Length: 456
Image (cartoon, rainbow, N blue to C red; front, side):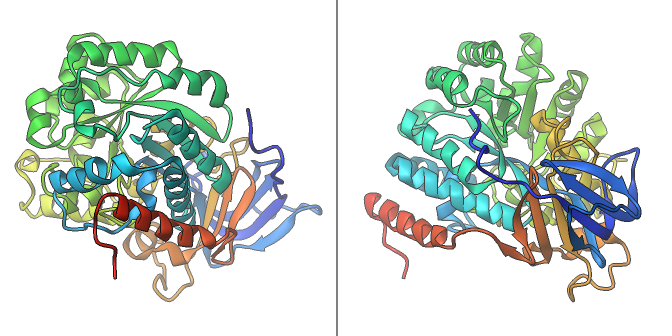
């Protein structure tokens, strides 16, 4: 069922922008973009359309919207709680401590707050890793927020955050069966703006038998799979990717998140099976206990990764910080100051243009939607952003990609379009700011329920 039938799309012609298409055939050019019927109708120079609203793109870059391939949206009302937390502190405070107290209304407002923050910073697609499926009502509330916000969402149905410890690190519990209802009754349309994937625990977080049963369930339902692997010392011991390969379960329908302590051989297995990866570089450099970003090691294995935020309780929810963190860690590798897994000769490197590709077209590939979005290709959905290169923090913008990666922020994102619908224009979101008051009220209720002191 589509919830977009009442939403109007505009006919828009963006003129004279620097187009960073992420389409290998089109490349980068100064030109125009025509959006019609929710899709990219044409790319070129000197386009004209008497029925389109014209937007001046001079001094701006237009590119596909950023694609965040791994964010726990339900934590959107808890942002910036613990930037110095370790992995264990995060799990204790948020997933175990607060997750059990979430009501469906808290999930809804958390997802909505995360979506609006994403859109404001140019993220047009989010893969929502939703391990807050405490009940069917919690799940439905999360999905409803994605329809309401206007973002493109890949909803990754996960496990509950009630009895959270029983669902991870050797869990014998199989994936919640409610995923069948969601697939058959709620998100059956794989061409809709909000679609369904399966967030599975795999052999790193559940028993091998449960991992196999869950994977077969997802594939029976026709769902792509995401899986957290390479989580600190535990991930190094479990070697989940190797175990999946040896059991014949590793496949191209899988996206592996983090991979921090996955071995180089495992990353080559991932590549050989056509699987994809998501690097949460900002979170990985901020949070002790996970390991370091695997970006360069993935490239060495033949995998061009996607990028992700992970949790806003630790890091900012924008992709600019994620790109900069990946680049900063690469510089540590070059300086010989990286973690032990990266102290090998001749690791391949990446640049700002690569990072923009990781944040757009590679994200679309990881979500299995690269035929629909991720590049400014005529016929694809009109998911695009316009970044003002003539703002003081980016001038003189000698290299557009380098300027966006090194200096960009949400305030430079002037226009955001998802499926032809304008959600931000002239630097302002077209949304009700009451969402953020509701987020603060949700946070207060959760703190009280958990017996925590309210913020001053």
